[in-house]
Amino acid sequence: MASVQLHQVQKSYDGRNRVIHGLDLEVRHGEFVVFVGPSGCGKSTLLRMIAGLEGISAGDVLIDGQRVNDMPPRSRDIAMVFQDYALYPHKSLYENMAFGLRLRKTPDDEIERRVMDAARLLRIDHMLERKPAALSGGQRQRVAIGRAIVRQPKVFLFDEPLSNLDAQLRNEMRSEIKKLHQRLGATIIYVTHDQVEAMTLADRIAVLSAGHKMQYATPEEIYNRPAAQFVAGFTGSPPMNLVPCTVEAGAALLGGVRVALPEGLARRAAHGAGHVFGIRPENVSTTPRGAPGEVAVPSAVVISEPLGAETLVTFQVGPVELVARCAPSFKALPGAAQTLYLDPAAMHLFDQASGRAL
Picture (cartoon, rainbow, N blue to C red):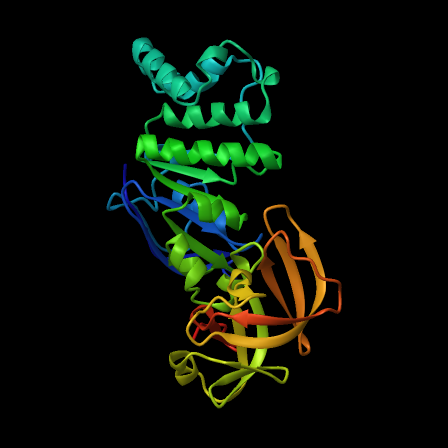
């Protein structure tokens, strides 16, 4: 296990096109940290800089307190699992997992012990004589992870390792990776564009946008106390309802519909336009829940999306739309009038210009 620190790390191409902007971040010993963000936000570039596969334009990367900027990848004591399994097709699973150890002149009995321990951990010990062509995508990914485990590195780096798998297999492998972290207690940095993956796996999440760190916090903080409009809109499925509004006399005006704000939030917001009102779908209800200061607003049903365990319903509130999580039994025709109840404790306001939370 090791810690990883990034101090004002920057990455530029041709000295002009900057893709990582002075990023500070610390990964603690044994922590599972996920870099998440849309395509092109810089998350894989950042991971490759930690691995030594990309040069660093400015700043420092430290592993266990040692500056590694000028160290080649093989000297950093890290293991990386890529989106592409990169297995040798002509070698057995055993030899694929043992290959890196053989290059390091590891004794045969030590190779045997490490490979068998990793194979049992990943439940592939019964297929070590097979070739990669005889495996499913999930089994191949297990082999790629096993190849990293036998190295016994200080830090594991995962670059979108589940992207090539179908939805069901992704869910299974996600659970396996989380169990693996619990058993090994290893330091893991994991890159994904899938916010569900990030929320379920991470001890802490770094949300990135255009090479900037938007928030670095626990999944609970990211979800319930987003520091920026971008974070609120990126996390959650469906994401937070975000509606431009005007603040006036302690209320958010959603196109003329008045929504009373909690006192603390109203105090922090300047009067006038230039704000964005936010509330998550589970905090919008079709029945009163008795929350202190609960706000009732008139609406009309736009569309219902039954999902089995719940129904997502889009409602028209004045000129804007709000999505609510409703019971699976909720039934209403489009255009039907419906009173919505909003929980004040779950309301958010963002500055429209800067995107920051108020």
